[in-house]
Amino acid sequence: MKDDVMRNFKTIFSICGVMLCILTLAMSSCKNSPMSKLGEQLSDSEMEQLVNELNESCPINYEIGTATGFKCEGKTVEIDYTVDEDMMSFQKMNKNDIYDAWRMLYLDCASANDKALIKSIALSGYNLKCVFTGSKSSHKVAIDVSNQQLKNNKPLSQEENIKTTVEITRAVLPIPLDSVTDMVGVDLDKDNLIYIYEINEDGFDISKLENEPTFRDNIANGITMQFTSNSSAGELFKKLCLSGRGLCYRYKGSKTGKTIDIGFSNIQMRQLANGGGAY
Image (cartoon, rainbow, N blue to C red; front, side):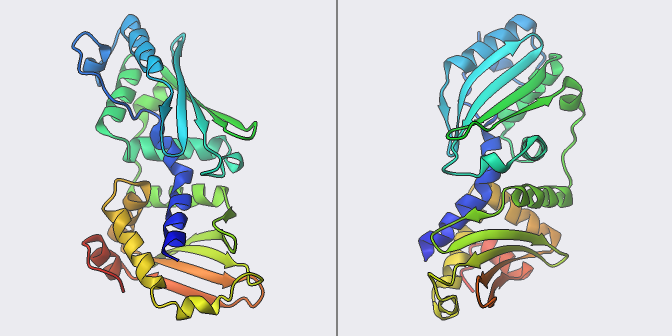
């Protein structure tokens, strides 16, 4: 059961996680490299050199995708990605979903180096284009971010960030998690972020969840692990704490409609964030 809980965390947040791949790099310390001037305005020749260096580093492998190429097309920096469709329901995402995820994660979760590189692209008068291609399907999504958008983007508010994550998650539902469990919904109210799962009662007795003594503990331990990581899940949980909300996992039987809620109040979430143990 513990493995299932952790698989749920991984699947839920992998839909956004690929966007963190945009500019996560091992930066060169060579003084002659444009890498040493990240965050500054670059000349056209320096930008071309920077892009060439990044391209030579490809393929760059990430948890759920691979950067396969960087290039300059006029005044646009283009990055190509292959998305691992064994890890996420990429074929369900459209351009707006991808752009929302990119904007949220670039503005909020990207590393200092990532943001510095974006800043150099913006200051140097370049646009950005990211092309995502599914590893199995022919699904391809390209997002174009103009130079003006790069310059004008402002960090999302805490509430905007949470709501954007919810909308992106909804876009790719349902998500099969294992042989008997599908994630079918996500709701947000003033008190909780609620993840909704459907249990196939042909293959599992949902009542067992109530009688599984370690089920709640495993979920609580998984939440604590996310808080201590640098993952998208951990960042979202921190924002939930600050917003005054808790977290609820709602399991529904496919035939009986029986519902089991595993909930953690805002106070409990804060205690889990501090390694306070399971409830």
